[in-house]
Length: 339
Image (cartoon, rainbow, N blue to C red; front, side, top):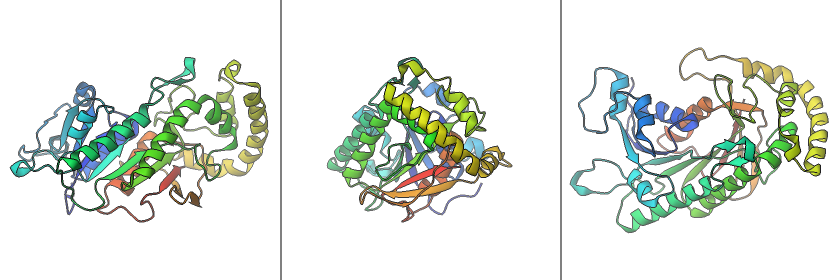
C-alpha cells in the first residue's frame, strides 16, 4: 500500500454503513488515521474483526490489519456535543496538546419509514450539524489548535431535489421528492443552511437517488439498473392514497414528460447504469454539477437517476477528503453527482 506524503486525521460522523463506510474504507486504504463516532461499536467490530482501538500499535504484516490499527472508535451519539467533541480531537497527541482533526466527514441521516412516509428522526441532520458546530466552537474556546486556517475541512452528504438554483432531478422524481421525501429534505435544507452560515471550510455532495450495489434498495428507491419506464413501474407501488390531489396531478404530468425524456436519454443512461466494476476502487462514469450556495448560483448541471452508496463514498473520499488541500472547484460549494 502506498503511504501518503502527509498522514492526516479524519473524523467520521455516520460511518457505520452506506456512503460513510465506503468513504472510511477508502480513506484508511490511503494510509490516513481515522476516528469514527458510533452508537454501537459492535457494528464496526463485525466489519473489522481484528480491531485495535490504539493508534500506537506496531506495524502489521498485512495492509488490512494495519488499516484497523489506524482506526479509533468513539462511542456516542452524533447529537451529543460531548461525544462529538471527543471525536474531533486527534488521539494520542504529545504533551497533552489538543489538536483538531484535519477533516470531518458528515454522512448521518435518518431511516425512511415507508408506512409513515417519513424518517425515524425528522431532524437528525439538522441536530447533528448543530452539535458538530457547537463542538468545534467549544474546543476552540478551550484552546484546541488546528493544522491550518481552513481546518477542519467539513465534507457533508446532502441530497438532490432541494436546490434553489433549478431542477436537479429527473421530472418523474418530482412527485416523490416533493411529496414522500418532503420531511427528510426539509431537514437537509436546515443542515445545509447551518454549514453555509457557519463560516467553516466545507464541501457538500448532493448525490442522486441512492441505491445499493446489489440493486436491493430501501423502500421507495428504484433499482440500480432501472430508469425511465422501469422507474415508473416501481413508482406505481407507492401508496397513492397518501398523495394529495395536487400531488397526483403532478405525478400524471411528470409521467408524460418522463416518457418523452426517457426516449432521448435511455441509451446513455442504461449503458452507464449497467457498467460493472472491473476492479476495486474503479467505478462507473460519474457526472458532476457545481453550485455556489453562498452566491446562490449554479455553475454547471448534472441531472441523473441513481448512484450507488459505495460510489458516492469513494468519490467523496478521492475528491474531497484525500487531496491535501480542498480543490478550489469544491471549496464552499455543492457538488451534485450522478451516473
